[in-house]
Length: 155
Picture (cartoon, rainbow, N blue to C red):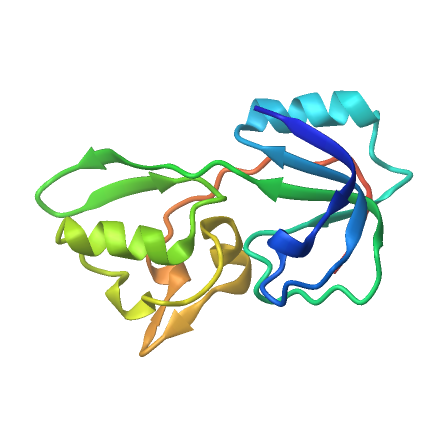
């Protein structure tokens, strides 16, 4: 479900717990929510946009005069399975370590070296998290995306 909050506090969305606010905060659960968001704000071309996951690599030094987008889709499911592999689907808002723990509990190998890395599943392909000779890219088969209209994305 799409939720848009005006003048939203961001303290819970950054690991430093910094007091900051955003002009708008959008939390979403599905690609349809993002399409609805685009419809709500028009083309999104005249505003600054920041997409955040767990906020572990994020330090606010000022309030953010724009739109912060945060995934709230936290699910993990098995899409298909054979004797040789298991294809797992996880929402962008799922905590990365929760996915690793879930896989380990089911004896699904491949992610165990990436345990205890902070962040979300949605950030993992962008950050290409890695540890002990294993990287996220080695376990990711595909990523579903929604293309935002040309906007002033913040890096």
